[in-house]
Amino acid sequence: MTHKNDIQLLRGLSDILEKQLELARHHDMAGVNRLLSQSEQLVVKIAAADLLAGPEYAEWHNRLTDLYEELQLVLSSRKDAVAAQIKLINRGVKLLSAYKGNI
Image 1 (cartoon, rainbow, N blue to C red):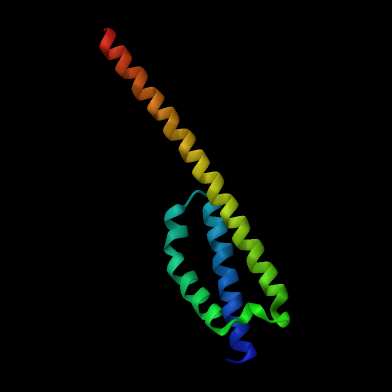
Image 2: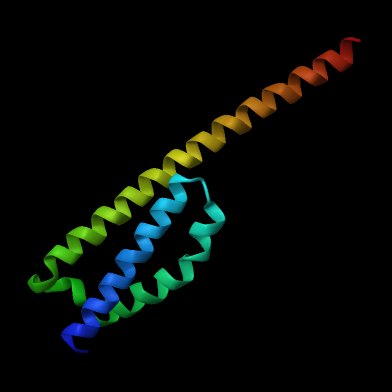
């Protein structure tokens, strides 16, 4: 693979992670999921070429790591928010059941 092709793969993955991050921040989990297969294909190619092992791509390694970690944080906080909403819904259901049983 040429240097130009290597950079295209790395830039492509970076762009997809940025898009996923933006979608996750806007609570568009369907959009995040739509991009998963594209990012997975790029990760497989990058790993097969062992691109991030060399020092010449250290900046890319750091950038991709930062994006991935930020995406994980956003998705994790979104998961926590959804769990809190489910907890509130369950409380509401229990409360309604209690009202129904006492009316």
